[in-house]
Image (tube, rainbow over all chains, first blue to last red; front, side, top):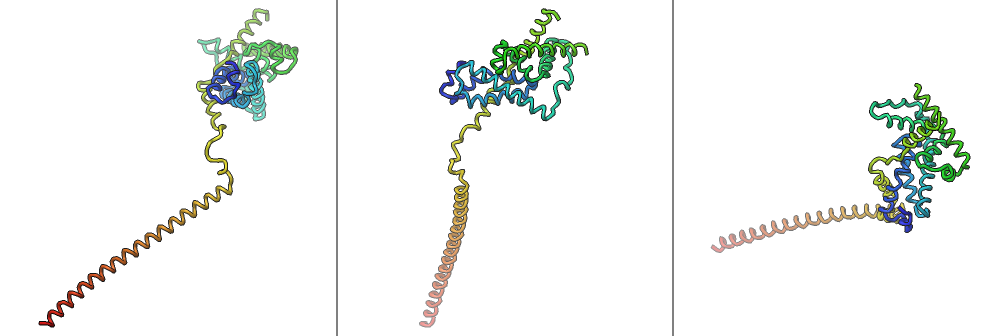
Length: 173
Length: 111
């Protein structure tokens, strides 16, 4: 949906509902893949759209809207991750591994990978989620996170290395 | 790990991190959370002043008290009127009987 429909402001609920429906999967998935918690992801996604309702008039184009949503969602995920650390909630590494079902090995592999992504340091996690969920190039990731492209590339390599090692370690156990 | 394995790993990662839809009714829940943020037409803003609220409460109290007092007065007046009517009726009956007795006495004395 082009942002021009909201140029007069978020007065029409139906216009805003269309915006939410168009981008809810992106925002929810960013939060879910970052935190690996569907309840927290929904809460964050709702908060992001409530904030969008306040700022939608300031956004100039669809691209601007998408980058704004990504940035706000990731900032909220980082805040939530830090809050959880302070509250010393059970870390994902401490939870038991999912049991492999005989029927759907792919599903089990994906769940295991999502859990491993959630154990990465927060900046690597952001880079991995933007690269593999949002399919962004290192240049786009660098622009989204306001960091140099070379930093993105090195974080991507290190994150992939860590994931492979962790995946290998899990396989061996 | 060779390139084919690397590609396979990245492919699996991409599949694992594909976009997922939030639980059903997500949009409705977002819109429901927008509702309380809208300004409510009532109560009027001036009603938020504490002094005005106190004044309204006092006026309401006085009106209730005055209404009760007036109701009591009216009931007492009606009861008094009813008693007066009964006394007047009794006097009329007594007067009539007196006249009857007087007429009989006069009749007997004339005989």
